[in-house]
Amino acid sequence: MKKAFLLLSFFLGLQFYTFAQEVDNPERKAGMMESLFDFGDSVIDFISGENWAFIPAVVYSPETSLGLGARAIRVFRYKEDSASILRPSTLPITFLYTLNNQTILSAELDLWASENRDYLNARIEASNFPFRYFGIGNEPLIGEGEFYTTRYLYFHLNYERKIAKGIYIGPRYEFRTDQIRDRVPGGILETTQPLGFDGQRLSGLGLVLNYDTRDNIFQPTKGWNNSFSWMEFSQLLGSNFDFGQYVLDFRKYFQINQKQVLALQSWWSFTLGNAPFQHLSLIGGSDRMRGYFEGRYRDINAMVHQAEYRVPIYRNFGMVFFGHTGQVASKLGQYSFDRLRYGGGFGFRYKLNQEGLNIRLDIAFGDQRAFYFGLNEVI
Image (tube, rainbow, N blue to C red; front, side):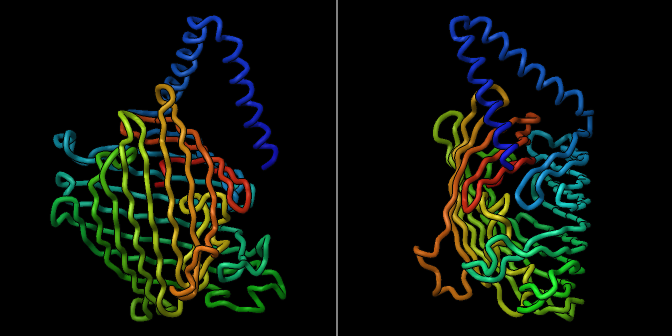
């Protein structure tokens, strides 16, 4: 991670030096900038076909370290004759191998149809995933975490139907099976034996209610994207754990001026019943509280509040500045200001297509300095 930070610092310093050298010659500077961005656009056009874009898959986060692989992604509209109304659908297929010896194969369909009255989301993922366990609660049992490996297969299917302006509702099914391997002999997983420490099989049905008034699904500048989801995992459906989980996710977008955007999120998760440790409410990772290892804090309940300010810089290049806070608790009465965790950071964006799909690089500061590289916005 230090090497990556030094490399980034060198690159930014080089760009600043070049800029300083060209200040007295604005025409040459403008020409160099245009050539640089023209080259970037030509690379994107080269790797993008008429229907599919094939790009090297590069990810980086504390959970995976550096991951390399391949990604095929298609951005399309289900009915071309409704292109002026219909939201774009996506189908990414990804294979990754990381320096943490993690292997990930995933495919996800995000489909809009019938003039945005129907929405379908399906995802399947298979992985061999060495990970870390820190214990349960707002104070980790082990600071650096204890390694274990999970081999899992995950699938979900979610269908929603529009019932009023901006309001969607529909059923959701989830399935996941894990084999827990390579536990530390005599470690906290073996000694404390949280539910699911020797594996899990989950199968559950639920309901999703969304209120979505975004003007763009990739780069919204205004509107709401609020959701409530309820999942019930039961032995009647083939699960070996019985529990329920409720998630509230509120997102609001403000257009500050013609181009800058402020995105806000308030996320709450509540777990009822006997949930395995891998399915408790947790915070951290690339989506909620960057700068904290995913699952470093996990418990019955969790909440996260995030803000991100997005600023276009030049053509397809932009920057974001973000901050967040959150905590986990076994009871709602345990939530308090002195238990909150804080973090923030900044990032760089490069727009891949006119729909607004972005490559992102984030540098975050929480209980560690962390880098995240991937696709799409966080909020």
